[in-house]
Length: 110
Image (cartoon, rainbow, N blue to C red; front, side, top):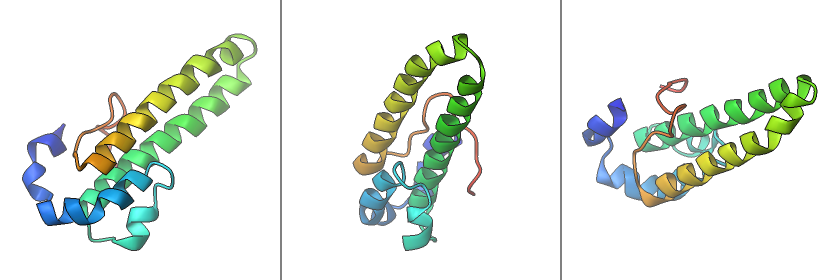
């Protein structure tokens, strides 16, 4: 939640300029890093998108390997990832600097 407290590090100009690309970061997490690498707002949402990507791929691999119980848990897990994806889209396109629940506190992209 550090980013919610330090919203002042994200300028209004940065947020307004990069809202669209930040929202798209949940589809292709590295897009903000390619188009505007100096944007703190873009980097924040690129990190959130990367965390969601890792969760989705890693979770599906792990659940896919576990017979029966893992396969049964894939649907609820997929719904959870979809909900986090929608939350991320709303935050990115809406100009909000909010971490995704549970996974958002981790930083891979600084």
